[in-house]
Amino acid sequence: MPINGEAPGARSPRRPWRYEISVRGHLGETMRLAFPALRAETRGADTVLTGELPDTSALYGVLAEIESLGLELIEVRRLQLP
Image (cartoon, rainbow, N blue to C red; front, top):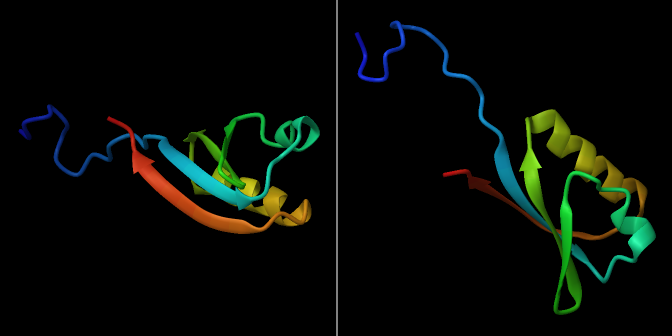
């Protein structure tokens, strides 16, 4: 039996990932409301949206919202949770 107690071949549950998504410019309160699952922080001339997303489709939803609002995407960073 594996060390973690799971049966051989068993899938481990998916864990959420923490993301940092940078966009150009400062987002006002109305724009920040478009991303309720993420915390917005101004860094220099840009805004960084940070938070946990449960899966890839949630990330794509955030990216689609960024595009639909006409925001310029600078960077997406995925950070594994401890």
